[in-house]
Amino acid sequence: MAYDLEEQEQIATFKAFWSRFGSLITWVLIAALGSFAAYNFWNSHKRTQSVEASALYDELQVAVGANDNAKAQRIAGDIQEKYDSTAYAQMAALGAAKVAFDANDLKTAKSRLQWVVEHGNDEYKAIAKLRLAGVLLDEKAYDAALKLLDDAIPAQFTALAADRKGDVLVAQNKLAEARQAYVAALAAMPKDSPGRQLVTVKLEAIGGTAPASANDTNAANDAKAAAAAA
Image (cartoon, rainbow, N blue to C red; front, top):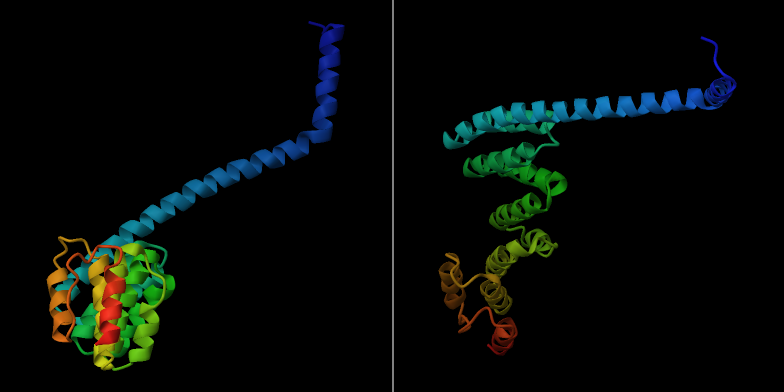
């Protein structure tokens, strides 16, 4: 059937349009389809990585439970090397650091914790900093420990950081500053926190007194004034 004049004009217009923009449209479609395929591949790859990393992490937990430092370090190294973008790499490094510390392998413990400080998310970084500060305290590297504890950390770790800072200051025999740190730790802790009793004991052992209400706004300032006068 012959095309009428209007249809012929439409076809001619389409041919002209396609002649001008056809290649561009084709490339845009190819790019879009390619991006979609890459996105699906990446998601599939991430899921596969997560499953594989999870299996290795289960093996690591067994090694941690058995206090097998050599095996724990080997598995943690594999996870960090192959699956460093997953949360399992951070958890594995923390677990391996604990085993190394228990085995008195402080060099390895510090290395694992430092990796988390440099590569972890905010929460895992905070945990690593607190534990690394503890290792440095044992090594009497007090200034390095305090520098770590003075770094910005998420609010939920403020009390723990202040408590650990108090420990470091006691080791330096800076008791007035240590009292301030312990009171700050109490001020940041919920009233029902199980850690409050231990911090209170440490505070009283160096001549301090826990505020009647450590969560009051002025509690920490009052303690600072008392510590300075002591």
